[in-house]
Length: 571
Image (cartoon, rainbow, N blue to C red; front, top):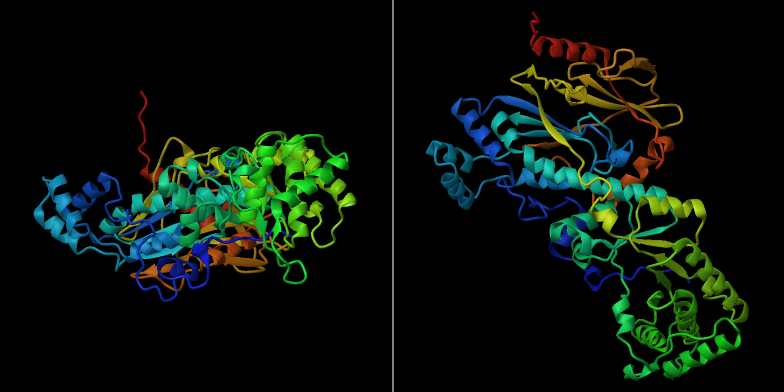
């Protein structure tokens, strides 16, 4: 009896409105606004507006500029990141406009600015903006631009903070989820349980969405499930179990036969049947005593959900109460023609207890066999503050777990709470610009660039390379020199078997093409990770992925770096 997903009622066929359009992607959506209504041009830092005014007053508002959005270091001490948030970025750009209330507020907040500036802002949009971006849901690496924004200097400057806010957490969360998936393996179910620990309602909704994109199978968050079409799951808490004092709390003990029994059949007293099964198990010598109030809680829950019975078994004692009581109810359900689903463990030594539970189920199957629904196949779900180190340890020691419910460490990205994407000017009025720092890691790669991923004979990615915009693109079968952006001695020739351009046009005064559905992005995410070598993805001591520049861009970067750096005089 394999576990079945029981969707929330809000996810049945006939979805309408926003949820239906989100599930279908961008097709037929027109100009959709960002999911969060707070995402407006005012969701920015004040210095973006003061810079915009200074550009406007200097007559530079329409100077053509290019900004790169990228990160400098991969998150979680790993070697990769998954890009997410592009769909929300495109919706924001497509509907960018200051409302009347926005303009009124800005006039009051910036009283020193010329009134004509606010008239200018009232008509501002992104009709002259172009955006080139990596595919959402694909691996991206340090320094390589994830998003390239081109357009009038004033408006593309105003986009900075909002774009970073839309991309930083989305990419971090998706990467975190993917790391859990890589550790758990493809055959385990991952369930996101983090709403109550998320950074507010907005964080909770985003976490559910991007956990699913990154490889999780479902969420407990009903609002996110309805909004994004994510499978929704949940059973009961410890409070439900402890709320029952005994069988006297069950008002109606009768249960109709289920779908896996022949004939119509008549209702039976399910409470009496559960007690009968418990007595039989006791005679088998599998246990001595159990908590009667827990048994009554399990029985009541099975009466409510006979086709989806999954019990939390650690309220009192897993081995001496929870599991025997679960088995008694499960055997009763089987006799009535229902297939119980499994158990959840929320405390204790999860690896040991999962193996013990599985062995207990096997012993019961020997005395109470069923080919249709053997207890040995019950789904064992675990929770309890699970993080990457726990998964790694469970894999090392061995376990019999089928599903993981993960909350706090997933949704808060506890291991690293921020990704650190930046948005840097690289070109203005056709001239390349560079940001110089005594910290070499903060020196930018100047100019408008094209970025490519080069693949080797084993069909895995070898290196990402950045070229100047006017350079000829790499070709399959032709050797190209790849250089580290800053270390002169680090260089290698690559003969690629496949060349993939990373940044494609996604916005040109309006959205270009159609955005994939969330399910499509999730599938893309899993496929794209298979193109990266496993040593780059592994949890422990991953191999650094190579990011390079062409010979021409290397020389140009260092020439500009040198020319823009003042020469000190020492006396």
